[in-house]
Image (cartoon, rainbow, N blue to C red; front, side, top):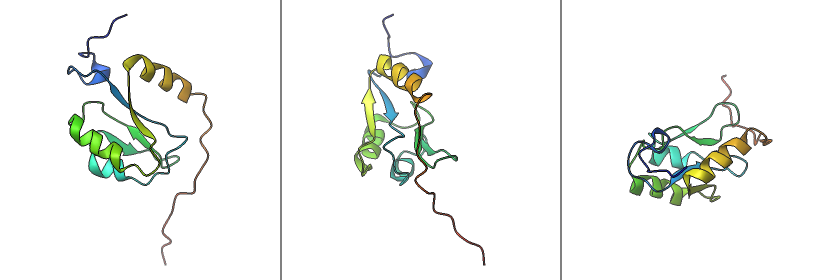
Length: 105
């Protein structure tokens, strides 16, 4: 099936690519979510970045967020690869990297 870029998964705008976070590599620094807060968020269970909205921010702002990643775990991928990667995520084991918690005294 040929994709047009107008699909809701791609934000409904003519985009050639989608953005994907490899959560097995992500260290949860939060830089991407700070820069492009309408696209990325840190999920609660492991503290890893995840895409919440493909069309949340402009492409230049998303690219800036990608460029801030210290472990290069965010990439532009084709729609077909996004579907494959998201399907594979269900079978991945994510190691807990130890979310820093503050202690109330």
